[in-house]
Amino acid sequence: MSKLSIGIVGLPNVGKSTLFNALLGRQIADASNYPFCTIDPNIGVVEVPDQKLKILADIVKTDKIVPAIVEFVDIAGLVKGASQGEGLGNKFLTNIRDCQAICHVVRNFSDSNIIREGSSDPQGDFEVVCAELIIKDLETIDKFFDQNKNNALEKNSKKFILAQKIKSEMEKGLLAVNLKLDDEDRNLLNDFFLLTAKPYFIVANVDESAYQNIENYNLKIEDFSVVPVSAKIEFELSELAPEDRQNYLQQLGVKKSGLERVISKAYETLGLQSYYTAGIKEAKAWTIKQSATAPQAAGVIHTDFERGFIMAEIISYDNFIKYNGWQPAKEAGKLRHEGKDYIMQPDDVVEFRFNVT
Image 1 (cartoon, rainbow, N blue to C red):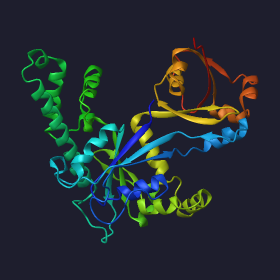
Image 2: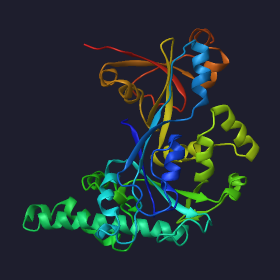
Image 3: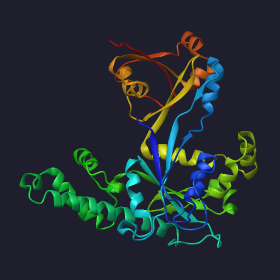
């Protein structure tokens, strides 16, 4: 698949830029204490934390480790009326179109020194941002109607009928991604490039005091389990050396960093998984859809691999570790030869055979 890109959205001062900086592990966005501090969308690429790669690299005796990557886009704080040009939000709404998923950040901390700019409570924060995205999408649908008002053929098409349904449902406050559609309509929906058609998940920026009990955090917004992150502590963690960071997490009683929780939720939301290639040249993680076939997985490496796919030689990660590499696992009968119909499994270790003519 193409790069995984996540747009971070939310009201001003809910902690978006602090979270963004923490995810990237360095200060990039201006996290000053006032609205509209992000004048241009900030884009950063982070490595997906993956302890398995180091283990694979040690077995195949390579020094080169290449993790999967995620691109985060920090989009300026939206306020009520952003879709009509209030604040700076309107010009940034279109930046969301290039992202594969949206990360909604809501405020769930009580620091009175941080200005509340339209923020009331987590549910309210989420609803305000969704309303602005819906209004922007309604503009898109109305523009489609206007462009085709004199086109009798188009007005009787399935796309036109779908647009009418989308408009009716969004006017009730429903996001396009939550519409009940068949596969054909779902494909047609993609033609509109709607902001609310993108999969999303919700992150709550919580008080530092909540961090030590973060594993038991339980907040739901519209039946969505919210991912808790203390952006301030995460940023402090990001400035530590990796070994010190892990020690600090253990002292806090936290198993996974905010970065790991956010990326895990992004993978879950988009239905993604990883597989590995491992050899003397490098140990590398690749991101694919959960339903990807072996040829499709090969195509992520290079399109020629998919076109000329012959077979995939696969060992499960557990067996690769248990038998200490390709040859011992093969001798133990743990190497499988899979064809074009094989559905890739999480953590497969793979070598592809292909023919390029």
